Image (cartoon, rainbow, N blue to C red; front, side, top):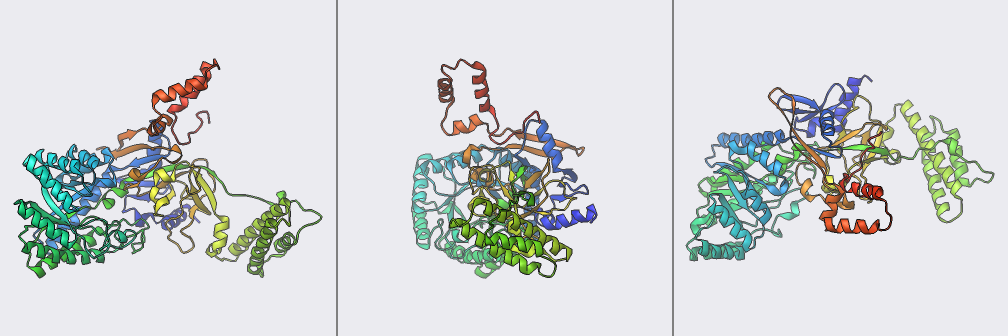
Amino acid sequence: MEPQEIIQENIQRFGIEKWSEGYFNVNDDGEVVVHCGGQTLPLVQVIDAARQMGLSTPLIIRFPFFIGEQIKKFYRAFEHARKEFNYQGEHKAVFPIKVNQNRHVIERLLHYGQDFSYGLEAGSKAELFAVLISDTPDDALITCNGFKDRDFLDLAVVGKQLGKDICVIIEGVEELEGLIEIYRRAETIPSIGFRIKLSARGSGKWEKSSGEGAKFGLTSTEILLAIDLLRKHDLLGKVNLLHFHIGSQITNVRTMKRAIREAGVLFAEIAKLGLNIQYMNIGGGIGVDYSGSKSSTVASAEYSIEEFANDVVFTMEEMCQKHGLRRPGIVTESGRVIAAYHAVVVTDLVEIMGAEYDLSHYQPTSNLVKPVVELKYVLDYMNEKNYIEYYHDALEFKEDLRTMFTLGLCSLVDKSNGEILFQEIVEKTIEIALRRGENFERDPFLRKFLAEKYLCNFSVFNSIPDSWAIRQLFPIMPLKHLEKPCDNFGVITDITCDSDGTIGAYQSFDEATDSEYLPLHHEMDDYPVGIFLTGAYQEVLANKHNLLGQMNEISVDFDEEGKLEIVSSEQGDTVKDVLNDMRYDDAFINNQAKKCFQGLNNPKLFRRFRSYLNSYTYMTKDPHE
């Protein structure tokens, strides 16, 4: 095949045109490129720029521009839907900062969202403090979700006194009592919202977080108690929002339509009790199509942002007409779909850990055990007529040998001979299959046997913790060499001392590729691998397993001339940083280090020892290589 044909085959195989929303593709040189603001740049050039700044892999590359693009898509979709269905209520969006609390991310999000009065959502005291000191537009909505103690509620009141448009969304009657108590002292109270518990459930992996058994939301009885309490204190006029959330990563929009219809009934009933609800906060949950399959599977979403907006606005209009309601403003709290695309984790190959044997290692003995004899016969006499039958016979003989070794009936040499012969049989099977035009890749055992472990310089637990915790799929692919065939089956493993440090699910776009394996190249000296769509949740959920800490990161954009511009960069954690996090303070480290070297009288060795406190926690290349 010609290089351009191979590139097209790899584009299809990795599905980059299906999951990247047009932000990434492959150029004619076989390199993954980023499309940003009308400019195109190979990712390997960004990696080189980072290295020149002393930032090695593993590395987070941020493209804040994509956050702005997603915000535009989001607002345009809702504006178009409002015009299409003549919906009179406005649309306000807030970003739940739990998705990514990184200051640089929030700053860029507010920069790109200022023309749309983009707001923020907080779910804890620390998050609310971060929100209050952020440069939100004057007319931006700030919502407070989650369970709240008196300090959280008081901080919200302070925010109101600072002139912020804050809505405290009540999760329980006790919260409301606490807010009223603070109001009586401060004589100021933010807007109030009710989080309602619906029977409607979401779809996908987070379906169980919604419905009648959900963790959050007021029951019908609690809503009535809250209304009575507010009426008693003459505060009914402060309630202006109803909120529900049917879960993250909604795979189909039908569940949202059912939830809106149910919420509409509650809206109508609450209006009868004297409340003037101005906003319906439908929560977040717009899915990201990690798999590129545009389906209702857990790693995908079968709808676009435009389809979601159309269905939401149409259903809201339908609901209001049915119940004779004034059209409330629609508030959305989607974060994943805004932030996911902007970040890429880049790692590099350390080594391929596949076992390679050949007949030069075979050690014939005078007393070969029967399974080894049979395997040798299969290898010698396998041909195009019998190769399938003989291959299956070899599987049986391999199992017989394993059983014999477990029972102590054969030697280690016998076991080694059997493994060598079996690998030769597999390779001969593949050779014959290819010669005959057969697709050997359909055989799951052959794929598993051929799959090699690609040891990469990163931590699954720190880079993509959802891959380990909930088997979340992230698009992964080599960043160069895509003009060459990916003729290996690989499994990506990290450098942690944990067998769970392996990626077990991959995108799949041809029937020959099992999602348990990733098509990769044979070993190459320079082999960067990109893990995409990591901008939502992964950084805050990351942990420091094996004391592998935060990665180096670089944030890039293009200047007016189309040249690469480094917006910001951050050094990753050093050994000292992660030890400090574990309460090894500097004084303790110094005292213990001196104690270790007491009596040695070797200041040079002591300085060498201490120098590793400043080392990157991940593997680094020898500067002399």
